[in-house]
Length: 303
Image 1 (cartoon, one colour):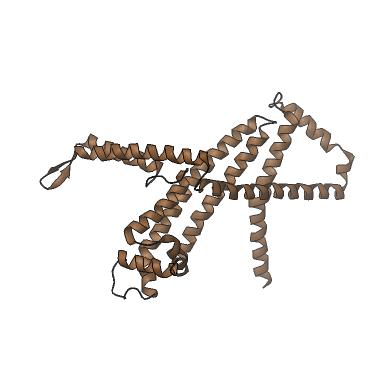
Image 2 (image 1 turned 30 degrees about the vertical axis):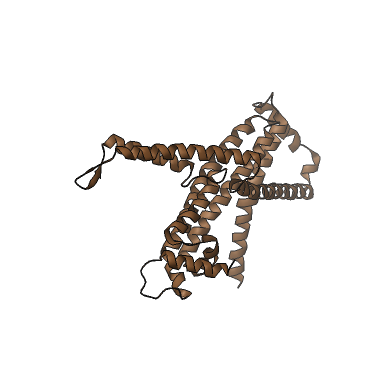
């Protein structure tokens, strides 16, 4: 038991150090540098060195108790800053995935929908240049390349006609729509039951993708913190921009993978769920629309 407790304690301490102390300590150090130098002397290393020397020569720091108390306060402050960033990260996740009924969100949704429709129209028109030769479609390479580019441009906006102000919200909505189109399944009703039968490997991959999205939101929260710090020390704005770019890129990749894994879980294990609740036999090959609709109706319990 003691080795187990020691291992768990070591992992918890490592997690606490990586997720709370280090990011918070880095932010506090940047804040200290920024408030010391300011805008006009943003690169004055000599002034920073002098401030550190003055701090080190204070008599109170020679006492072990005072030094230990100062270290404890710094750890608490770093943890508090990280906890605030995590709280803000939750708000950022909800903002990324929001429906958006306020005027600004509705305007963003309308603009994205208009862009998507324009690209979709051009994509459909490009298909008019495809001819049928000997019973098979054919088109010059430049036409095929143009069709592929238009499809990629349209999908960068959304996989379906946008209904939310952000790509993130529409990507989750697209997973729901694609599953319903393919199998007649209401993903909101089926997913909690499907989750119970997924193998451990699938659960780990889905958890990993979800955690990556949350981690990207935390980086976005630190971007907000460094942007506020830029009011006192403008180089912090560069850190904020870098954090925001990294957060956007990682959130995009993580949520795309998360949605793909959700669709894959229904593809691979949807029939197994229908079989377990008695809607199909063991000899069925694929999940049909009829079974998917019956399964969704069953799980909604008439709601």
